[in-house]
Image (cartoon, rainbow, N blue to C red):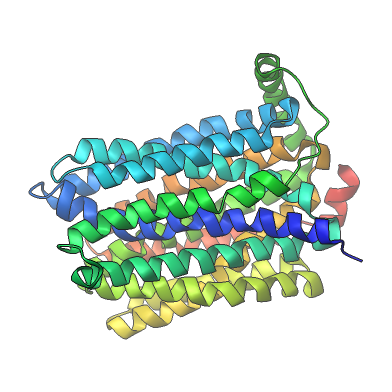
Amino acid sequence: MVSHTHRRRIIAWALYDWANSTFATTVMAGFFPVFFKQYWAAGMAVTESSFQLGLVNSVASIVMVVLAPLLGAIGDRSGSKKRFLLFFAMMGVVMTGGLFMVAAGHWVLALMLYAFALLGFTGGNIFYDALLVEVARERELDRVSALGYALGYAGGGLLFAFDILLTLHPRTFGLENAAEAVRYAFLSVAVWWAVFTLPLMIFVHAQTSGDMPLLQAVRGGIRQLAATFHKVRRLRMVGLFLAAYWLYIDGVDTVVRMAVDYGLSLGFEANALMIALLITQFVGFPAALLFGRIGERRGPKQGIMLAIFIYFLVILWAYRMDESWEFYALAVAVGLVQGGIQALSRSFYARLIPTGEAGEFFGFYNMLGKFAAVIGPVMMGWVGVVTGDSRYGILSIALLFVAGGVLLGRVHAPAGRRAV
């Protein structure tokens, strides 16, 4: 029987996804790329603004690639997962809110604030993911992980819908124009993120074996980081899963980050693309819960394989796409599997790793996820430039799903658990 306290901890943990997913939708995937080109970098050559934005995304991702496993190890040793999560969350909140103050033409300041907000978002997720094994029993991992993603889609979608309405009808809300409305959209994300982080801070109490002073934990974390590399090499199923995850999540992240850019390259209207992103969010809410059930009944590995296959079909369709209605249809298809593949990957990985070292191992997990955000978009762009056709760029992403699926097929969870 599930106690009221246990249920409350699960909901409080999952609400952080509801909180910070608004950054991923409204800022990262939605308004920032368009607003950067049309407001802060107005007058700059399109290719130059794309380069600057891509560079900042890559640099921020590389920084977190380097820091993620070390931060996870320090969090384990110092017993400070919640404090680290709060630090990164507040960094994201403050920097996102700061975008409200940036005037037209100040593109350097906008990029700096965005970069630190992105670090806050990705850094916080290291410790949020690591807390999964603290709040959920092993038999609950699939369902609880899926609940987090489902609430993320719902919360991100609700605020994104409001912000789209705000920008389409600014005068209805007492604003002068769409530009002012977008600035208020950034502010709304900061407030939303801060408010819905509070339940986790109040009700989730991490049970850690380490309670070292911070400086001692840093030194120990560095030593532990080197040891973790050896552990991953020794735990064959963990290493094999991480390789598979890096490949297929590379494809997933590329679809998320480059979908709007690809749609614009085909001549679709920006407003239509924003609505398609919104469709993905609301479809993703029930779909993530459904994948949680699939994980419980058929196993998380089977659910991930199903999602990879659907993504492969999506890429093939996107390659041949000509009409805007097809973009909406693909948005539905992506929404059906995006949350599911992320949720089941997290819960499947949690079954393979030593539970007392979750922060350390989830640091590696998040490191690979962020590294994917460096490689995937670059590959897509490079293939598009070489071939002179962005359609071939999107088609190249299919290789990542095929390779990831092949490696995942060789991962056996029972063998992984016996080796821990």
